Length: 112
Length: 113
Image (cartoon, rainbow over all chains, first blue to last red; front, top):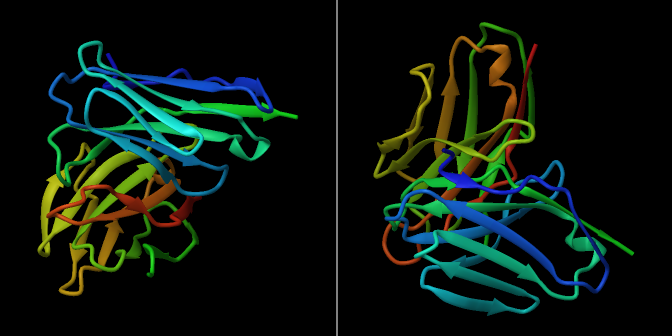
């Protein structure tokens, strides 16, 4: 079983719709969770971090964490073509400055 | 506020050669982590440096080695290059105390022929 799993996609949504990206992880001791966006040929860019169960909102982005289900998600509201990228879920098991374990990423395509 | 910088941006080497990649962390950060990202995959952790010591290491052979300097910058060295070492090499910096978020540099794309 992979430590962090994501559907590779592509996930195609129309402009203005809500895009829902999902991630599951295997280590119940995981403490910190991150979503990075990666455009083709570029490096990962941090979008959101979440540490506690529940929702965390930042602009059009909402991260949701459910530690009991070992599940973390990212919702993108009012999706724009510029949101088209690969979204990487990363988990930090032991907390502060521990290595990040990444999923393979979900490719999101937002069409006009 | 300067972000994470890496050099060079691209590199072409042949099998058996050695390569050195460089990273300068974000201002105020003291920890540097290196990741390898193969095409279509998520980044894989290579190792992490703090206080000039290797603090953690991922599942990479000894051909991969590193160093951290007193100014917190870091180098990644790869010896005896293999075709499979072709990848995007990412450096991420963070602060040991306080904020733990890792911020990535632009990466070095290495092609081994």
